[in-house]
Structures are given as structure tokens and as C-alpha cells.
Amino acid sequence: MNKEEGCTTQEVHQTESSAVAESGEVVVNKHKGFTGKIGFVLAAAGSAVGLGNLWRFPYLAAKYGGGIFLLCYIALAVTFGFSLLVLEIGIGRLTGKDVIGAFGKLNKKTKWFGFVSLVVPVLIVPYYCVIGGWVTKYLFAYLGGEGTTGAMTGDNAALYFNNFISSPWEPIVFFIIFAFLSFAVVIFGVQKGIEKIGKILMPVLAVLSVGLAIFAMCQKGALEGIKYFLVPTVKDINIAEVFLAALGQLFYSMSLAMCIMITYGSYMKKDTNIQKSARQISICDTAFAIVAGLIIIPSVFAFSSSPEDVMQNSGPTLMFVSLPNVFSQIPYANVIGALFFLLVLFAALTSAISLIEAIVAVLRENLGMKRWSACLVVFGIVLLLGIPSSLGFGVLKSLSINDMTLLDIFDYVSNSILMPIVAIGTCIIAGYFVNFRAIKDEIGIKAYSWRDKYFSVMIKIIAPVCMLLILIFNIIGL
Ligand code: PHE
Image (cartoon, rainbow, N blue to C red):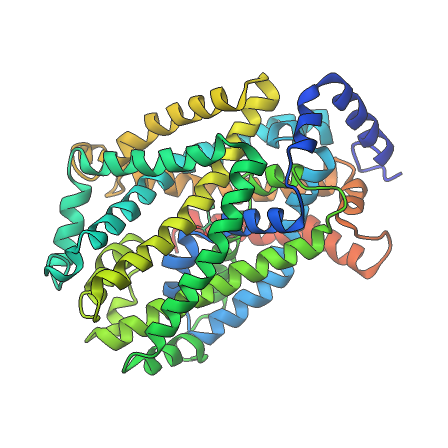
């Protein structure tokens, strides 16, 4: 037995059986978990593939030396990203519980950390649904033929977007539509809702994204964009900055420190190989980010007169202003615009669903709520926090702090501050305060193997230090 650890493997298993005996809910979980490996991988990959891949990855790659960023990102994904991903899935499956139950079961003294972690999804879901609403609005706009009316051409593009987000009612309507769609899936449960939608939407997403990338790359002038994205450029690059940017993006993109992978891990079958699944999730996520870059950057280069300036924009400006402007120059603007925003909508939907499920699981397993009543409570929270965020660009603009709207504030607090803290806490708790061996056994890491040593060093030292650097970097805003 390792002295530094909170409890032994035997103790964990003892707690497990008593927990199963105490609460029928755990048993329900096991039976109503993902039916198999593919269901789990697609649902987790659906969570990982989201707005981050579409509006941040291509921009960061363009900013930080193209291929250099890509290489750095891939190297970090197979080392750091992979280790954190298997750790979270392992904690979930070992304990078979929601995030609060999981930290409590690992060691009674660390239960409080589950509550801290839960703040992350509670803060993210509302504003993620607001942005999902914007995506829905743009999908409708293209379906309605607005892409060719000139409403989104040139300077009009920014005007169109600003008019929309500052309207006192329009963003709320679309926010509610998006939130409703997400909850409509979660209410059907893990197998009939989350797993099923993953199995349908992920293949559609793959076909749509590859199709759009091929279309973009075939346009005249696109080659310059492909080179800009993929060929490493070393000039003016600060490698430490590239490293931190890649690391920050990676951990957001893989849905780490959001309670998601612990929750999904708890629904995973015992005979599914955690490491293999994590590898597949990482490959899907990275491949999708690269394909997103191959849609966006070549289109910008083919249809914009100052492509490098356009690529300085990230986030909402890139997606809702620059790209619609680019699309308005493309033949069949409405078709391409609608297909693109459909892609974004599906990507955002599967991510929102995973966040909602993480909160619903906590309510069901700790307060014994039924799925539908838990969904209702979470929907209430989402409305409560989402409506003000949605109005933060118009009616509630006065609530901005330092030019940060309510939505930016939620985003900053959850992503830049809380998520690194949760990631550091998860590593420290797993590595020093609970039975780390039991988690490693669950993941399938044999004692005394090189993998064992590597994983220990990664979780106990390297990952917390890297996350601390990100936290400092985010706070001082370099
Ligand atoms: N991985 C997601 C992305 O890239 C991040 C995320 C997941 C955000 C779930 C919200 C909800 O966008």
C-alpha cells in the first residue's frame, strides 16, 4: 500500500459495493450507460468537437506560425492531453458516479472539490447556449436566402451582426431554441438521447466538414491559404508563447476540467478499453480542428483581399462577421452558408448536451431527482443566467466591466480561471490524496511499467505545473 494515498484499491471497491447497495441510482447508471465502445467514443468526441475547433484553432494556427503550431499541438495532444483525458475517464469509470459523487468516493475529504468543479459547467452552459442561438440565427438567415441580398457583404456584415446581438428579443428567441434542442436530447437519457444523437450527428459532421474543406480548397487562390495554415513559419515566433497557446487550446478543445469526461466515463462499460477510446477521441478532435482550418483559411485566402488581416480575428468576429462576408463572394452563398452553419450547429449541440448531462447527473445522483425534473431545474438555471448574457450587447450593455460584456465575463471566469484550477486540483487529488493505483488500474496502466512512471510524472508534476503556467498567463493577460 502506498502511504501517501487516501485509500487502497480494496477500500475503493468496498465503498463501491456499499454505494451500489445503498443507492439504486448507481445500478441504474451502469445499465443505462453507453451500450458500447462506439457510442461512448462518438458522444465524447461530440463533446470535444465544438466551437473551439472551429473558431479558435484555425485562428491560433494562423497566428502562431502555421505548421509550427500544428506540430506543437499534436505533440501536446499525445502527451499532456491524452494523460488528462484518460485520468478523467478513469476517475469516472472507477467510481461510477457524477462529479461530486466521484470525488467523494475517491476520498471523503475531497468531495468538496466536486462542488468546485461543478461551477464550471454551470457557468458555461448558459452562455454556450447563447452562442448556439447565434449559430441557429445564421443558419436560418442562410436558409431564408439572406446570404445573397448584400446584407452580409462588406461593412454590412458587422452591422448585421451588431444589430442582431443588440436586439432586445431576437437573441433570446434563438437562445431558447438552441437550449430547447439540447435539453430535448438530454431528457431522453444516455442511450436513447446522447448516444443516439452522437451516432447520427458525428458522421454527418464528418461528411459536411470534409465536403466543405474540399470545396474551399478547390477555389482559385486557396493554395496560398493551405500553405499559410500548414507550412511552418519560424519568423517572429516566440516558441514559449506557441506552447502556451497550444496547451490552452488543447485542454479546452478536449473538454477537460468541465466534469464531462468524468460523467461520461461513469457511463462507460467496464470492458471498454479506456486508452484506446481516449486515443480515438483525441484523433477525432484534432482531425476536425485541422479540417476546420482547411475550410476557413483557404476560403478567406480565396475570397478576401486582405486574408492575413481577416485571420487576425477569432471567435464571434471570425464566425459571424468575417466568414459571412467571405461567403457572400462565393457562388451559391446561401447553400454554402447554410451547410457551414449547420455544421457549426451540430458541433455546438453535441458539446452543450455533454455539459448539461454533467449537471443533470449531479442532481439525479445526489438529490435523487428524476431525469426530467433535473432537466427542468437545469433549464431554469440556463434561462436565468443565459437571458442576461444574451442581452449584454444591447439592453444590459451597462453591466459591462472593462469593456467585457456579461458573456465575456462568464467566459473569462470559467475558461481562463476556473478550468485551469479544476485541472490542477484533479491532478493533485488523483496523484497525492487518493488511491492513484486504483485509478491507474482502471485505465489499464500496469504497475512498474514505463507507462506507469510516465503517467505518474505527468499527472503529479508536469500537468499541474503546465496548468499553473496557463493560469498565470491568463490572469496577467499576456
Ligand atoms: N471542446 C469544446 C469545444 O471545442 C468545448 C466545450 C465543450 C465547450 C462542451 C462547451 C461545452 O468547443
